[in-house]
Image (cartoon, rainbow, N blue to C red; front, side, top):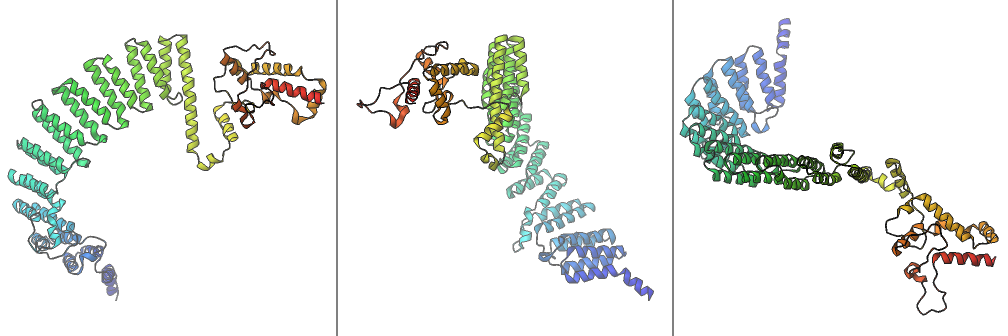
Length: 575
């Protein structure tokens, strides 16, 4: 009883596996597990028998937990390694691959079996038989074959194997035929084209290798990822072969390549073309190639391209010839690289002792250099002014720096507000936005009082008006002047009646008065306030209240100051 119990316990995994296979006989993983269990029990015959049974039971379209080809490969390995019967393994591959003993669902399963069959023959050193098997695998299928066998000649796995065997075991002609057929069927990859061209080059078939490259670049044109590899090898091999003997043909190849090449990868071909022109062509054409490179490459590579263009121009034409290139570069680049290019331009002008030119370049480039984010630009300009400038130019530099810093400060503030949440930006009132601006930038934003009914002047305020102390003095003098026409009683009455009080600060704009003086070409005399000139108020200011022509009942027009005085006098007489 104990022996029977131990035997049953030892067979438990196999019995459990049998139950699972009865539930789903199309489980590839369980069939392979069953084979492993028999191998652990030192029963390779049972393992082989179980896999043979799986090929008869498992349906390829219902297979789960693995591919059906795994069963074939595992069975062949058992025959070869465990049972040491290679003939049975070869017979298995023959039944599967040529006699269609098992119907696969995917062509990749059948190609794996063919590849394993060829590798088994190579292990047995049957070279010719292995090559013949590989050729039969990609040969045209017989009429009436199923679709899996009809799709087999386009299997990339089998073509890789065949081409390697042809180069190693076949002849030059059979290898060329195999590569040509792969290109005709469009199953070749860019690496196949490169290998084909390299094989022909090794065999001294140079023109045929270039023909292979031509077929490759036609088959894999830009923007295919393999086009870059093909064109690079093609151009390199052609230049290495002919050097400077066929210049026009090389230029035609570069023109064809760069015409369809994407900008992201064009710099490599431009540099190769420029190097060829420098060695075998003309300097002018070489500089033209570098100029075209700067125009085509993406923006993040333009700065490096212009640096190379400038370096080549200095080498062949001299430093003064780079001025136009610097100007084109500054116009074409973005702000940050353009500021760097301005530094290089200014250093070049400084080396030629063109101080004024260099200062003009610094001034132009300042508009693109934020002092807080690009301190190198301003440090270089500072050192330049210390070495070559004077007090006036140094002050001008500081003035430009302050204006640029203020401009970038406003831009950055607006960008920060745009980056914030939309609801928060919309909920801010004008007063809150101004207060936030004051706290962030450390400035004061206080509106000056304006006179109701008057149009605010658009001209630039004078320096005297900008001085708040001077403005307060003038307002005090105007108050004193208007106080002479009022009696003490009227002053008490006006103080008692807050609604009728006349506030000079709210009714008179000193700046408007100064603007009128500037238009007349006269300078106001602060010491004589009573001699202030008056001017007729335009009718457009009063709108519909303006008097009509021919109305003799209306009083003559008076200035604002006269009307205020008349109103004060009439009010005092009435009281």
